[in-house]
Each structure stands twice: as C-alpha cells, then as structure tokens.
Image 1: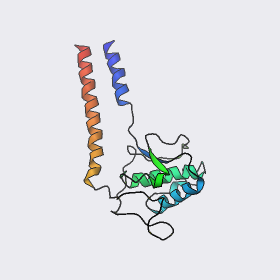
Image 2: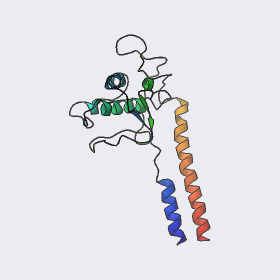
Image 3: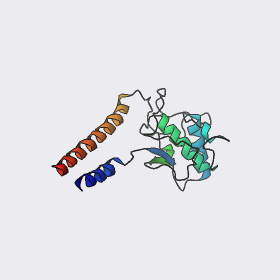
Image 4: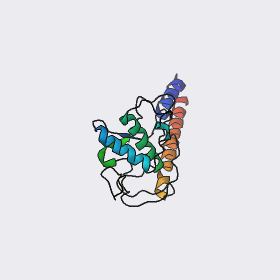
Length: 176
C-alpha cells in the first residue's frame, strides 16, 4: 500500500506545468487589439500561422490572432520583463487560450526554445513611423544570450531535482 501512495504522491508532484504564455486581455476593444497585433507581427512575432490558410488562422477573430501574435512576440523575445505588456492590452498567463484548434501549435516557455533576437534598447518604433507608441512593450529587450535568461533553466532543473529527492525520501520512508 505504501508504494502505491508514494507513486500517487510522486505523480501529483511532477504532473504540473510551468508554461508561460502571453495573452491579450479580456475587455479590450478590437481596435486596440488590432494595433497590438500589428505591432507584434511587425516587430518580432512569427505571424505566419495566423495568416489565411495558416494552422492557427481559425478561429478568425482579432482577439485570437492577437493572442497568438503577442505570445509569439513574448517567446521570441525570451520572455524579457515588459515584453508582454503592450500598454496593458496583454498580460502573462500560466494557461493557453481554451479554443486553440488541434492544428495549431501554441509556443510556451516550456514547449519551445525562444529564438535568438538582436539586442534593442529603448522604446521600439511605432507602426506609423514615429518613435514610441502606446502599444509597444516597455523596458529594454535583449537577446536570449543574456546571462539572466539562464536563471529560468536552473530554476527548472532545481525544481525537478528537488521534487525527485523529496519523492525518493518519501519512498524510502514508506519502504523501511
């Protein structure tokens, strides 16, 4: 009986996901979502999947396309602080959208490796040609090669090792 309880405990401790997504907020108007979508697609997001006939084109709504675009931007920027804000039109979430079609692969912090991006500083150029925009991310974005990005990897490994050793200790206590 003790091994069964230990197995259930082990599965419960390791069965969670620490994925991180960037999603457009509810209650934001379509015009603001479209501006955010345009900015993300023009500044680092891979929006090919939400083009007509793309794997993530449906559902064909501004909100769903915005979700995909800001998440792609966020992942490609290495989840740098401020890269999922867009002046309050988007925020970080632990869960993906609920209506993703089976044909669509939705990148997350644990599901893909962020692409290397060039280093840029300051406020990005707006789509209209001026400098700055109310919908641009805030802060400084740097590439994946920044040493701070390694912290997430070690945190994840530490979590796995901690879970493993605690589970091993529990199993040994139950088997003695």
